[in-house]
Amino acid sequence: AMGVYCMAVVFFMPWRHRVANWLDIFMHFALMFLCSLLSYYVHTDVDEDIEQTIAACAIFVNCTPLAVAMLLFAQLVHEHTHPKSQQNRVNTVKKLAPAMVVFANAPEEEIMSFMSKLDEWGFFHIISALHVISTEFCGQNYKARLSDGTLKSSSSIGEKVGSSKIPNL
Image (cartoon, rainbow, N blue to C red; front, side):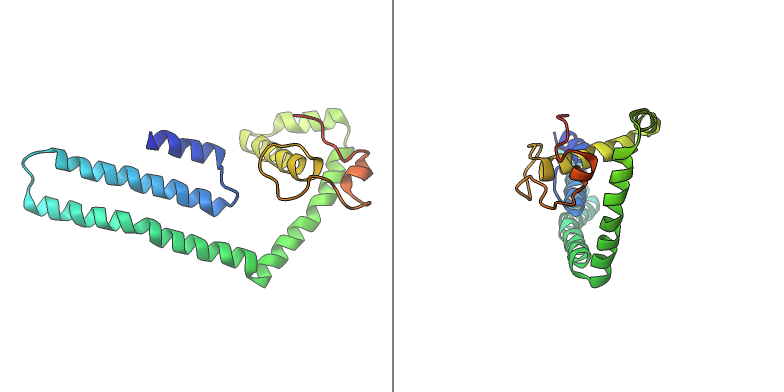
């Protein structure tokens, strides 16, 4: 059951922050490894030296998620508070709107050709972006919202393209 859940987390990445997904995956691998270690105790004749080694490994494996969580938390705080990280994020976001306008204004044949040539991950990321934009700006309910679901700016991309609504998926 843990393996199935871990595969589902790898596939769906359900948490809003990537580091939370990474921690969830790491913790499940640690738990599966711990269960494998503890399966040794099923045997009735346990060697004292091996038992000590397994106990030490079990304690270590139990403590690693806390250390990983602290490192990932530090990375998350750095990513959201450090001025250079924030500036990189702003610079990346500034490139998004013009690229979306170019994409939206491309002929349908060109878009279809482009989309058909994407690999599975490229297609997955574009569809994921569509879900976020549809949820946050167009009022469709694909997951929990951060905004009220409407575009606010009169110079929005939606108005430049002709509509702030994205068709149902």
